[in-house]
Length: 103
Image 1: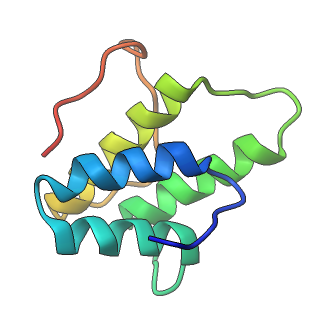
Image 2: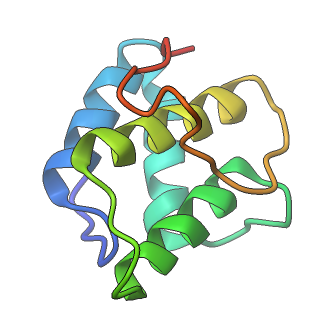
């Protein structure tokens, strides 16, 4: 994982890759590559929903996410990706300070 991402800090990208690789190394690499490059994504793809949200936050002067909130969104998108579920948008939800279980 040597690619840079303008809308996600390197530390969060590396942490996510490390955690996800414990579940499935190949899928973790695919997830992070899709997130950074954005190629081959379609409406409903969990990585596209995450990517769009992170890019909107990056461009916004009003909306800011903590690292904890950002990691929560990354895990929620990862779980949908692993479970082959579609995801129209990412939402922090009411439990914004609780980390979901990594699928």
